[in-house]
Amino acid sequence: MSFASYDALIAAFTAGKGQDYVFNKTTLSLAAASAGHSLWNAAGAPGQGSFGGSSAGVWTAQNSSTAGAIAFANPTGPDTLHLVLAGCVPNAASAGTMLIYDRLGQVEFLPLNDGSLPEVTAVSSDFTARLAAGEGAQIFAEITHTVMATGAVFQISSYTNQAGTAARASEVVTCNAVASQAAGRFPYTNRFFINLQAGDTGVRSIESVTLTANSSTTAAKMNIVAARPLTYLPMNSANVYVERDLVLATIKMPRIRDNACIALAVLSAGTSLPVFNGNLIAIAG
Image (cartoon, rainbow, N blue to C red; front, side, top):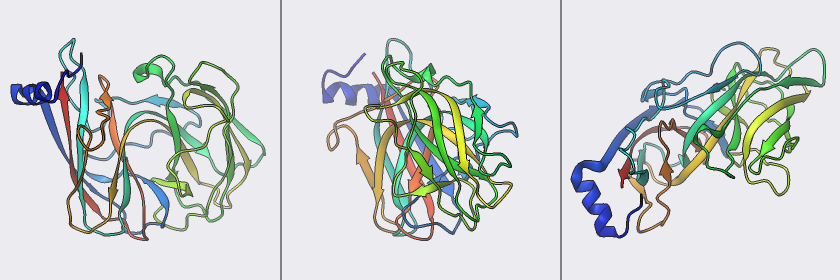
């Protein structure tokens, strides 16, 4: 279904088809300027999500029933659910920009140090449960285990793109050192996502990840996360509510697909991460 007019949107909300999810995330106090930080494992509401198990390359699909998800109730057919507003109050001016996304799943426990290089980790994954035909996910890396005293080098060495073309390869990612409070940190700066092969707009599955240079920290591990971005929210002032109107100000109204695992990440503007209090409003119609 769709909304024929703004009046129809209001009518759907007043008829009880709206949902307002209030979130709170208490993050680690120390950040790195221009670095991405996944809030998946941060405490608050919803509770902490899990980084997964201890087997390298395992793909774990995630949905609205996964612990840590911002979960909306599925609409009654033929309605579809759409995000219409995202708002947040950070308690620090250096909060940066928040990414609101559907977390399709994670490739877990990938090594950032291995005795034999190159280390190729085979992956069996499928991102397509909540992707439309011809649509691909974006991918980012999050550190899950210990710090990384010196940066590793890795590549998504084989993936299938949005058109179903296999054997594609991402950029080679040279990681930054992460000295402390590493859980959830992206191992690179100035962006959310890993760059794909030229011409590709998304990823439908990953087949292998290759480590070509070690971190000096033997226990360092990361996940590769498949994300369907919904919107971005810039946050410039401490203790001031900011919102993204996705109906009138930014005409987008991204669809929240059934069983979506909504999650948050932040690209920090400073060296401290604040507490985030906010809300997401979705309407079905």
